[in-house]
Amino acid sequence: MSVTRQPEPAVTAPPAPGPGQSDGRTRRRSLPVRLLARPEVGVFLGAVAVFVFFLIAAPSVRQGGSMATVLYQASTIGIMALPVALLMIGGEFDLSAGVAVVTSALTASMLSYQLTMNVWAGVIVALAVSLGVGAFNGWVLVRTGLPSFLVTLGTFLILQGVNLAVTKLVTGNVATDDISDMDGFAQAKAFFASSFDVGGVQVKITVVWWLVFAALATWVLLRTKYGNWIFAVGGSRESARAVGVPVTFTKITLFMLVGFGAWFVGMHQLFSFNTVQSGEGVGQELIYIAAAVIGGCLLTGGYGSAIGPVFGAFMFGMVNQGIVYAGWNPDWFKAFLGVMLLGAVLINLWVRRAATRR
Image (tube, rainbow, N blue to C red):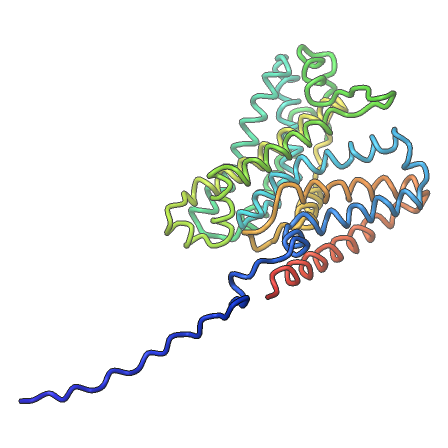
C-alpha cells in the first residue's frame, strides 16, 4: 500500500528587526525611566514635598531640636515598618504587630518586677516570647493555608485580651509597676532609650538603630540568597517552591522578624517610660502597614524595598510633628494621613505603569 506524503506546511520565520530596530523586550530604557521603576523613588519625592511644605508652614521645624523630635517620631514607626515591609514583599502582612509591641514590653516588665530579677532577664524572655508569637503566626499560616489577614487578626485579638487580663491579674492594675530602680535598668536604658548630643541637640538612639536596621535590611534584600527568596515567595509561592525556594522557612522567619521588631520597639517604650499601659498598641499595626505601603511595597507581594519604608516613616513623623509645630488642630492628623496614603498609592501605581510601559 502506498502512502501519499503530504507537503509539509511552510514555516515562516518572524521578520528580523532591521538595523536600529528592537522588538520592545530588549529595548534599553532611559535612566529617568529606570529610576521611576524603583519602588522608593515615588515616596522619596513625596517625603521631600512634605518636608518643604512644613518648612514653609511651620518655621519652628527649621530648628535642630524640632527635627530631632521628627526623626525620633519617625524612628519608632520606622523600626517596625522595616520588618513589616519585608513581610509584605514576601506576600503577607501582620495585624498583630501593634499589640505585639505591648506584649513584649509587658512580659519584660512584669517578669523582672514580680520575680525581682535583673531587667536583662526579662528582656531576654520577652525576645523569646516575641519570636514565638511570630513563629506561631507563620506556622499556622503555612500549615493551614489561611490568609495572613485571618491568622494575624486572631493573634491580634488574643494578644489584646491577654495583655489586659494578665496585667490586671498580676499587678491589680492596667499598667505595670515602675522598674526604674531595678538592677540592669540603667544599662538597658542606655541601649534602647538613651540620647546623645549632636551640636547641642539631643538625638534619640532609636534614630541610629533605625538607620542601622534599614541598611541591614537593604543588604539582606538585595545582596543575599534570603532576599531573593523573599521576592520569590511574594511573587508566586508555587513557582518559588518549584525552583527549590524553602517557602515554609522563608514565611515563618519573616513573621519572626516582625516579632523581633516588636520586641525592640517594646523595649524602647519600657525603658523610656519605666512602665507600660496594657491597652496600648491597638491601631499601630495600621500605621506600620501604611508606612510600608507609602514606601512602595505592594500588598500583593513581590515588589518593594527597605529604603522606601524609611521615607514612609519619615513622612509620618514629619506630618505628626509638623501639624503640632504649625499650630493646627491635631484632630486633622488622621485625615491628613488618609489623604497622604491614598495619594502615595495612586502615585506609586502611576509611576510603576509609566515606568513599565513599552
